[in-house]
Length: 269
Image 1 (cartoon, rainbow, N blue to C red):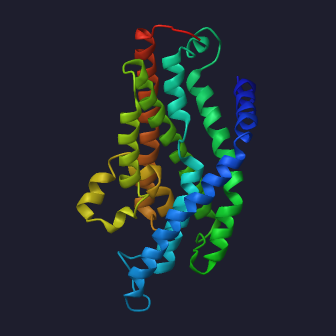
Image 2 (cartoon, rainbow, N blue to C red):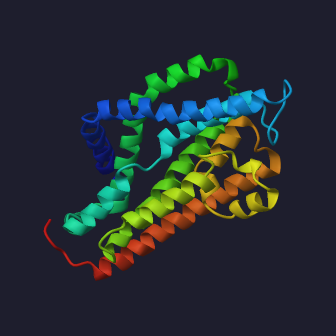
């Protein structure tokens, strides 16, 4: 069973390597909006007294926040997977997985991780150079255990993003076009996930509500772990919520798949 999906992983790497230049270009151009964001925060902090902060973030922490967001996003973001899943359903390619001893969710998960690995290898140089030039403002983890918890949280964030996107793509069993739903999901993830700004600069009441949604655990929480802003009881609660949402998203994916297969009509494939 393990060998089956490890082979899928290896095939995914080989297929994705064909697009390594595209990944490199995407990573380079992705640094342009990051640069604009950092220039904006530089201007905000320049108007403050030396050592001033915004909601507890000094300049180096704010810069590090966006740099780590870029890394976590590269490790966990779902790019083409949801579109490919929806296409498999619409084109009838899903039929082959119904007559073979292979689990479609596990198959797609192996391809997802292979794609993320190739993307990060391609993006390593431009992102590494960017961090090097901003090294004066780049904060390292407080200790090895903090970094280990960050890696665990980033892995869980990747699973959460994949299961949610997978479930959303399965709506293709019921509707012809899922792009609207995917764009709505992306909008929520971009804002409520902490991609645009740290969520804890929002009013406490808003943050309290967001913590009961899955979005902060897709990006904001792993970055907060890295920066050491999630500690003690908050850290434990954060991991409990993140694991719970991964479980809920996984069960939802399984449920929607079973319901979708019932009404699926093979075409093509």
